[in-house]
Image 1: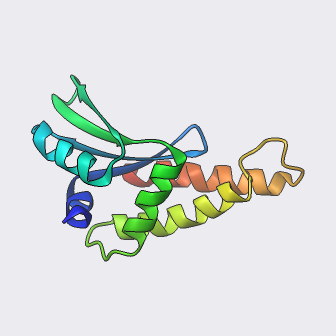
Image 2: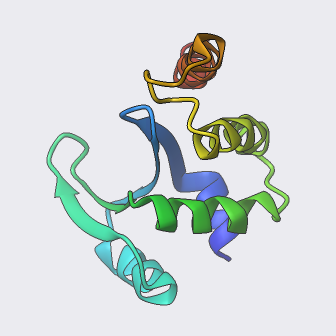
Length: 124
């Protein structure tokens, strides 16, 4: 059930070069409370801009858990290909490509390019 809900209403973003965030927006908070309690992670807040509640999952460990959960699922939307791109980015994050102090500047440029491409995906 959660996989289908994520496929239709979930959102993935990358914040601050190193944080994968998963969020769900709904007018009905009850649904988000059920998901939060089922997963035992995330925080719910009200967003006036969209007049909805948002369940946000922002910690590195929780985001990694969500990524692993969804990467084993078959999703029908474009999120299936997004997860493939995220897998590459997460691998680079694990290898610490995102640190400017990384001695191999090509690695830093590689991850920054991948992150920027991922962030532009909805603008085409």
